[in-house]
Structures are given as structure tokens and as C-alpha cells.
Length: 235
Image 1 (tube, rainbow, N blue to C red):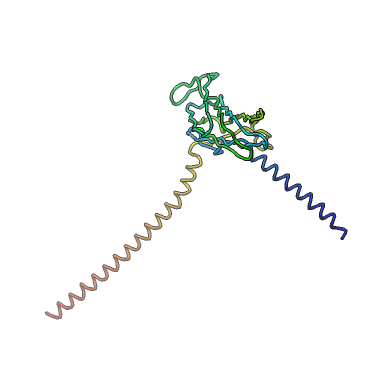
Image 2 (cartoon, rainbow, N blue to C red):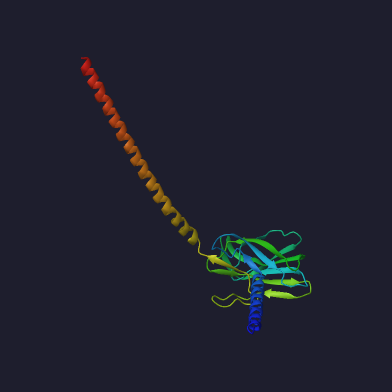
């Protein structure tokens, strides 16, 4: 029939579109990211930098994460990653920053993992404990350099813009939420039904005890009247 070629052409276009969407989704999901995506301001957090291999013919051999100098972190420690060497380097800060322990004049600004390999189709997570997280910003951006065995270096350093399309090489970002904002709201929401349920239970218990007391009183009065009538009949 004459419409078959058109149907085949539409099917081919749809298939190509589906493959393109799948390819874009795969590329987007292959970025270097910080996990979890958010943490509470002023708290200590364990952040995992997830590094996937985006190349088919080369392995990732080195990863460098740059910690933000404008929001230095007083405490930074790294978790050993099997097969990898790690080096945390401190630098002098442009100006001293007040910290919980006093004045901070230097801080860890770069962490380098080397000596291992992330093969094509694989990923690796590098864990860092850090804090206290700043309370004067709503996000921390960690620029990262990913080096491949063929000498290529991919820099993940572009800042994601609110409401804009994701850049080609976005920097790993940790969103910071106000202290106790979400947990307090959650606890309040949970507390109200619990208090209502407790009040309802107490009210029901009081009514039950009141009913039992009335019944016991009625039985006592009945027994007392019966005993009195027996005593009178004997007399």
C-alpha cells in the first residue's frame, strides 16, 4: 500500500529520536557529581565524589577536586580508596576566616587521587568528610579535573545556572539548606497527629474508667440494699 513507505520513514525517525534522547540521558548522567546533593548549613557531612569514565578507549587515572577557597572548611579528612593514593594539600587563605576553633589562616584546597584506574563503563566514588559547612551561602561548588590514560584532561568547572540548561561540564555542587528548617517542620507535622491521637486515647480511657466506676457503684448499692433487706427479714 502507498502509505507503508511513510510509516517506515516515521518509524525510523522515531527510533533515531529515541536513540538521541537515550544518548543525551547517558551523557548527562555521566558527569562528575557530589553525593548527597544537599546538606545542612553548619553541619559536618560525608560527601562522595562520583567519577564515571566517559571514554571508550581510555581509563581515568587521576582525579583532582578543588575545595572552595571563598568558603574554606576547617576540618577535611579523606577515606582510603583501595588501589588509589590520596593527597590533601593545604594552602594559605587570601584572608583569615573566623572558625569555631578560632581564626583559620590555611585550609585544604585540593585533594588528588592517583595510581588507580577507572576502566570504560565503570565509575568510582571518592569519599571526603568535611565541615563545618558554611552558613552564609546556599551552595558549595567543587571544581574537578579528570585525567585519562591518553593524556586528556576534562575540567568539570562550569557553574550550573538556576533555570538554565545544564552546561557541558558542570562542577560537582552541594546544596546547603538552612539549619533545622526541614527537620523542624517534619517533626511538627508528625507531632500534631501524635498529640491528637494521645488526647483521643486519654479521653476514651477516662470515659471507660468512668463507666466502670458507675457500674461498680451500682453493683455495690444493689448488694447493700439486698443485705439490708435480708437483715430486716431476719429481725
